[in-house]
Image 1 (cartoon, rainbow, N blue to C red):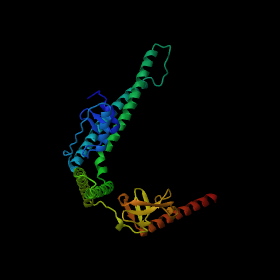
Image 2 (cartoon, rainbow, N blue to C red; image 1 turned 30 degrees about the horizontal axis):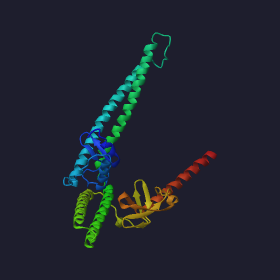
Image 3 (cartoon, rainbow, N blue to C red; image 1 turned 90 degrees about the horizontal axis):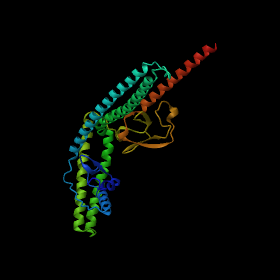
Image 4 (cartoon, rainbow, N blue to C red; image 1 turned 120 degrees about the horizontal axis):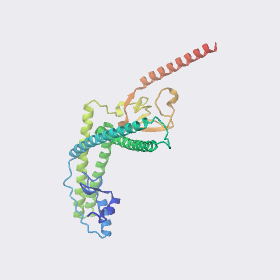
Length: 331
């Protein structure tokens, strides 16, 4: 009930309040109930004298694909809302700034004549212009903030379904699924050894089976995203694409492949490992490992030798031209 102090007790346990939903656990939508956190929150309420009854219904969780579609729709709604809000604030800010400029432009930088009859009006106009400029600056800051949030929301789906991001997410989900499968095997083994009662075994397996089903649902959906990206011609790099001596591109960096591994390529590490433009900056401090999901391109060893030779030739030609020009000046 509002004003009974319950929300203040629940806030440290990630509970939030909303006019439309009420008090809710942040990040709990379409996820398994966090029994540990809920139990701690209930104990805190009981210690404060509140009567607490915990009821959990996990049968209403949506399928992962449905939740993803709703998440994308909400991101589109945020982009539209913040875009319109940014436009309103920008229009108001520009209008107030121009109004303040009109007021000050009329005086042409003339100082206030303290003993003149126009002094009071001049001071009022300056205060009005100062207020308008301040409001314009505040609204401009809010317009910029809303515009940034609109851009973020607009690119949300593109970033979330990016193949590299999706591959890293799939790796985490597959590791979680293997962990749940190990927990299932351990639970059954403990029950066979007589360490668990039948009731405890059933409750544990129900939750583990639900976790496993959720993970399989997510993995299947993200695997479809990867399959779609491959069908559209997106290159997914792997160990078969490289051999030692090649150069791998990651963002703006081009690094030599020292060793090809199952999930990564070993590349030079350290502050000296920047874009390769000559043999001089092929020095490095240590070896690093670059995952294939962060690879954006490849240059073969043969192509790199040609590029290095071309760069050295241009450098020599530039040095010769500079020496010739300096000689003409000395003459």
